[in-house]
Length: 410
Image: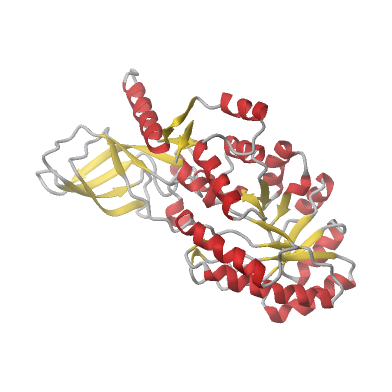
């Protein structure tokens, strides 16, 4: 599969920046071949590095964009930059005519040079720094969310021409990361918010919601879209001209086709066909595009036959596996390169490199053979909230090598 909707020259420029383009090879085969080549190359060095590295398959990102266009053609995606802000990812998405959901001045400044059109940005943070609001005004970013009276007054003072989306609370009980405990106005607050906006001369143009990150119940979107219709009616009663509905994020690849079907049905049921529809997908575009390879730095055996023990890796929950804590993800390591006995299976707990007991990646993993110091393990589907949430705790490098490839078969 080639890059969807990218002009030939832009596509050629994109692919020229990627080291390994094989459009007739599966993602799995290309990623694994690349990891083995990197490990083999390091092994030849006089002082080989044990640092972890990523292989990012931008062909997977392009495939996910195509899937979005096929299933939700009327909804313009605004990629959640916080999910993975690597320049190659942002550049690819910009070239695929994806818009952006930004939460800060820095994120706006990262994407604006790539798109050169501030109308393709929604400032989707309901509590903003006043200086960041002024920056948004200076660079022409008008769309932003709110859910409190205080935020309205802050926006009035710093960006009176802003185009506002009322963030409403939703039922996010079916999501891994629940957001309504912090964001979103309940229905009993809507009248005061909408009246205040009208009275101080602010322009409310739509409604935004988020059913939570990693949503597993497609019906959650229908219920939220129903509530959005009620909020539209309330806003129009206060004189606001409503024309935008932001259906947020939380999309999972495994359930996306069914979720999209429910969303299309709800858009029709609640008469949003003539409304501008946007969304804020993050993990849906990038989660499956990145694989992390880590080196076994240490091993402590608890049985003399090496069948049980503890493994210590070059990365952990304070680093690029922060998604375990930050995003409530469960990751599973797989052996990439091993020098141990193939006659003995091994059961081990898996740990990161820091001095904190919290830095546990897995409590129990069954390996098909003995794992030794110097072996390499890899974790698939770690493109979301990994790089962007990593830290330098204990003095370990926050940065990580990323080797990009582009596959075409998914």
